[in-house]
Length: 463
Image 1 (cartoon, one colour):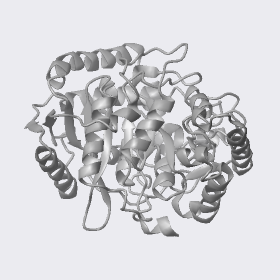
Image 2: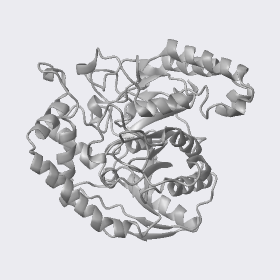
Image 3: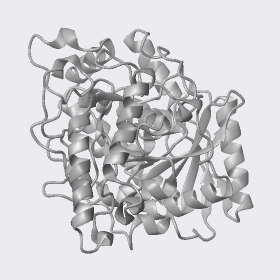
Image 4: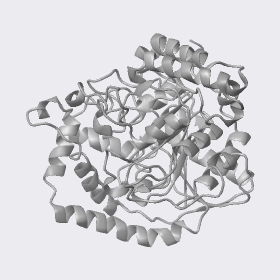
């Protein structure tokens, strides 16, 4: 699209109108957007169109010039409603741009709106009181995952070409997997998390959701880079991430594991099948694939839960508005508020100690293969309709693989290589060394070439 805009083959207003028309027609079915900025999108598209006409050399225009990109409703955009998925913030308008939004704007993108997210981004599904449930277009009775569920539903349903998401415990990889998309959780510090939201514990990062590896790599290039005040810095990368999508990865040493750290999590046969098929394909492509010894055990799970509950307390809730919170949010915040400072520091210290033992093992491999999730896409209400304790336990059993790489800060991607007999997408996850996004992108592009998925689209794609 960006190339077509530069050559005049496609006009930015045409693109904006195309997606806005699809949003108007289909958003109620898939629950992708909580706010649609139609007037702003058309205005930005008109400005982008004029810039093409006035440019001495259109090739010098920004990389996403005129391309529509939605922003997740956990990220602030100045002048646009900002709900954080909660009734508590139903009347708030953004008063600044998040750093990632600033970078998207500098890249020339056009804002279609804010994609739906669950309350404060805490659950692995996107349901609540602020917007309709986000649904995977592969089966509209099933969840699009979370917390970037609206972003993934938008891209998978053809309501956006790519989307920005964020990931604190799997929130890019989970919805990308259940929606049949490619998603990247970058290395900690690769993308600035400021200026409004604190980088508590370094668990969360922004990242791209796309239909192809090349599109995601380009979006990562646009979003990446430090900003003043950032607490973490990612190792530098040679060249652009987009260039890695064009490079063969060479022969890699790849570890694999489908043993979840959660003792009562059972990996569904469909997820095992996707994992085994990916293992076979990697060997077929010439890579060495070996089983990885356990590096994270069940003893670490309570410590991550401690940090997650404390994170739930960071978003301020005015006195008297607690009754507006979702039951799960209220329960998590109560756990967090009951946690003492020494308990937080102890949890952090235990996890850091485990990482110091794990990195020498993990760094012996170029990539690590897991199932992205332990189950196929879940029905709407499977988590949300339960009492908080059961809700949380179901979430843990659904996604026992993702959070370990938020703890470690390593990059991880989910690749849409497999669909089960019911036509539901089942992703596989690849994690890399710190700073190793380039290797993961090269490897994923090789997998994409060997087993192309771009031709697979849900029925709603042609609606």
